[in-house]
Length: 240
Length: 229
Image 1 (spheres, chains in turn cyan, green):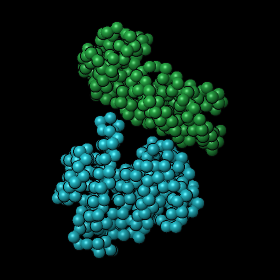
Image 2 (cartoon, chains in turn green, purple):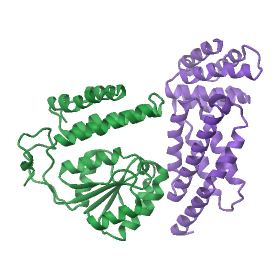
Image 3 (spheres, chains in turn red, brown):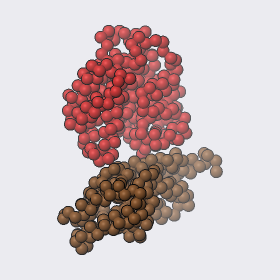
Image 4 (tube, helix red, strand yellow):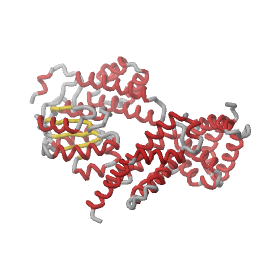
C-alpha cells in the first residue's frame, strides 16, 4: 500500500460529518492521487474505512441517523468520482451480476463490491438495492452472467437470500457468492445454501470472484499491483 | 432426528414465530412496560413505536437463528443490540428483560416444539455478559452488590455498561434523568444520592481490585445525583 492513509481517512470522515461534499471529494481525488495512492486503496482505506467508522459511531450513538445518511450519500459521490477517474482493469471478458436481495436497502457494500470488480476487469451488472426476486431471476436469465454476487446486510432479509439462491439455480449454473453483515452473522446459512462467502477486503473478494469466474493468474501487469489513479494513457490501455 | 428433519423443524418453528411476531411482541411489551421506566424515559409514543420495532427484530433474528441452526446469529445480535441500546439510555438488564418477556410470551403459546427457541434466547442472554475485565467482574458480583434490591440491580447493570464502554456518562446521564423520575414517583429528595452511595460502597467492597474503574464512573454518577432536575 502507498503509505498510511489514516490521515486522509480522518479528513474524509470530518468532511462527511460536516456535510462538506466538495472537501470529501477533494480528499480522495486531489490529496489521494497526489499521495500516489491507487483507486482501490482510496476506495478501501479511505471511503470504506470511513463508512465503517460512521457505522461504529452510529452504533455508539455519537452520530444520528440523519448524519449517517448524509455521510453515506457523500461516499456515493466520492466513489463515483473515483470510479470516473479509474482506468479500469484489463477486461477479463467475464460478466458478474451484483444485487442486494429483495428487501435489502443497504446498497453501499454491494456498490463497493461492484466498483472493485469493474475496476479489476470484470464486466459488472450492478442492480443496486432491494431487487425483487422475479426481476432478479428474469435479469439473470436474460444476461447470463458468469458469476452472481448477492448482498445481505440485515439478518431479517436472509429469507430472501434463501428464496433467491434456488430460484437462480433453476435458471443458471453460474456460481454464486454472498456477502454482507448478515452473512458475517450467519455463515452456516451460506454453507447450507452451497454458495461462496466473500469477506469485506477487496483482495479476498477479487480472488474469490476470479476463481469462480475461472480466471487464472494474470501475467505481469505493467501498471502495477492494482489500478492506479488517473492514467493519462487513456482507455485503450485496457486492452490486452 | 436427521439433519434434514432438524432443519425442517427449525424452519417450521421459525415460520410460526414470524407468523405471530406482532402478538408475541405485544404480549412481551405488556409485561415489560408495567415498569414505569419505559414511558417516563422515552414517552409513551416513542416507547411503543420502538418497542414494537425492536420486538419484531428480536423475533426475526430468533427465527433466523432457528432456520440456520446457529445460535451464534442471536448471540451476535444480542451483543450488537447491547452496544446500540446501552448508549441510548437502556442498560443490559433491560435487554435481558426483553428476551425474558419474549421467552414467556413464546412459552404461553403452549407449542410442544418451542424448546429450541427458548434455548436460543437463553444463549442470547448469556452473550450479554461482557468478555472480561472490570465490567464482567461487576456483572459477576451484581447479586452481592445489589443484595436483592431490584433498583440497585438496575444501577449495577448501568455501572457495568459504563465501564465496558469507558463512558462514565452512561450511568451519569441515567442518574441525571432518574433524579426527576424519583421525584415524580413521590420518593424523598436525595434518594438518588443515597442510592449511588449504597452502590459505591457495595461495589468498592466487592471489587476493591477495580477501584479506579469503579470510581471513574461512580464519581460522575454521584455528581449527577446531586444536581436538582
